[in-house]
Length: 203
Image (cartoon, rainbow, N blue to C red; front, side, top):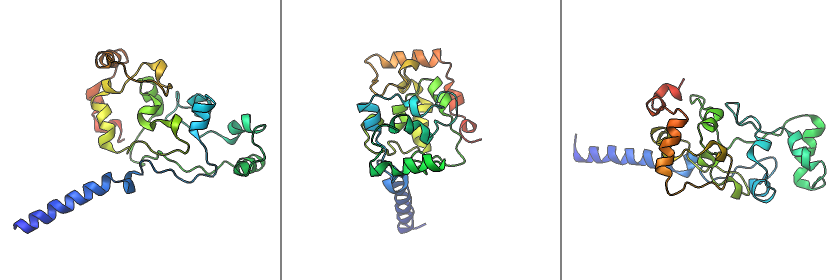
């Protein structure tokens, strides 16, 4: 193989890798158009809603769940009802047809993911979803590619937190988190060797 051919193969490999990490593929920090411009910043930071108020299934189910319109209506049957942005919400209630939300965190069909096990093992919402409480619109904070997932699966002690802090968007690891993380990994029965098994995520 000539030097030119080797260079071409390397350049093509670099191009594919770079494209795969780019925002065009990962869609990191890209807010998608939604039927209603929902602001986590307003609802979490300003109003103080807990994640579980809307995402009711996150502790028991594989999916966090997208809230039904009636959840919105708990407040918005009284608040801001006449604003144009709420027309889709009002229409959804009248027709009993769900809003067509566009998934932001959408894994490929060949990837198995379960929210409840991550919650039970002390992985916080912000670890994957980013600083949601400061997002006026929702975007993907992490690439959700296999290499990114494996960072946590190979070294969960870096990312784990106490279970009672999982839903705390302000939680930050303390200066002794290395030791605390190892303790929590043992306490929560996390088997790192098992986490590296392909069949954990590809079933």
